[in-house]
Image (cartoon, rainbow, N blue to C red; front, side):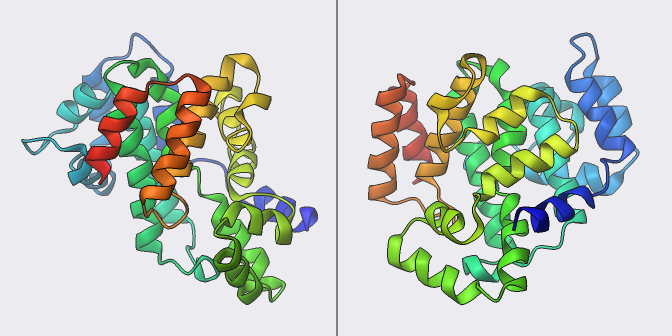
Length: 266
């Protein structure tokens, strides 16, 4: 099965120039919002999708964001980076998620919920985290697309569905049938794209944050908690909230702001 996933990942095309420019801008502390906005405006579809994402209702803004410069000023380049990567993935990956019993729309909504939860939890107090947290939360479930391809190829979709319903743990089902979890596959995709080590490690150790290098552990811990609140189907409930709150306390994260984020998500 590892050969199957390696072949798919090796065939994923490199990121286009427009995405690579945003990657470079996000790492440049001296780049102006105007310069970034001018570059993005060359692609009207991308501009429209970014503004649509920025106005997602769960962010709770009272006024509509109508310009790219306003979106960049409000969210910062880290989040704009996440928006751009998410748009690119939606446009260039074939989303068939039948084994997970979710639609592409539910997949995209779950990604948006992951990001808005991170924003409501940590953006105000630690915005510097979002150069990593934004793309990580938006795209952490991308590996589900590869898992789906493998399960369909091996005629294991029904078995996978049954395991999810039996154990209520999609990560356990992924590991049992595929030998790897979807978020770990996302880390492999980001590595293929030569993303920075911290972003790859955030994804690679999402399910086991204490095994992450110390410098990357906080990001992996936050992502682990968010994945616990919102599993693959994006449905938050009392059990997922309690389980995640236990992890928040265990990791020494901001419990008060976590509860605020839960209230907004509910």
